[in-house]
Image (cartoon, rainbow, N blue to C red):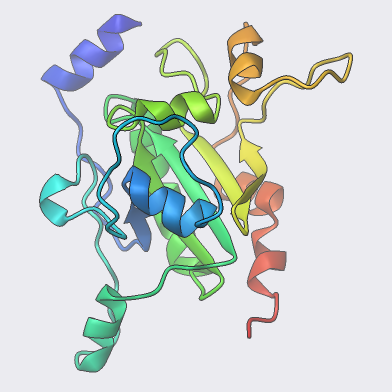
Length: 211
């Protein structure tokens, strides 16, 4: 369990470096772009910088290769792209997790296929932003099946996730954090493109009319 972290630190494996349209988000960008301005940080800890995305020097883990089709003004347009999309697919990951490492290629290819003005893909390192892991009920324990956790947001509200949280049998209102802690065994999910496409209904979202 702990040895997973140790081994991955001593013998780090390369992250996916193929085509991708995944944005590496910091906490401020996540709250601003994904959750929206109406969803402030619950705790009153120190404020983070309000940049849209992490400066390249601060990015930990996978480097994001942005796909640019045209050479001229389009390149500058892409860099300053307004990411206020209706839908976001966000992966919560950790650098030491082999499951995250392997899944990033799957998500990268999905991001290339389904990236649209109203649908964007992002990822957040929960070792850097542990508050977000706790907020969304994601365990960083190497023995858990929580990583990677994939969240689908619609206009700032989480509507689906993989792996799914265990539902309380009595239908009690429990927080996501409590549900995650109370789950002794979490079944791993099939990290195949079809699982993400079907569970998140990406085809349906992609075919929505965008104004």
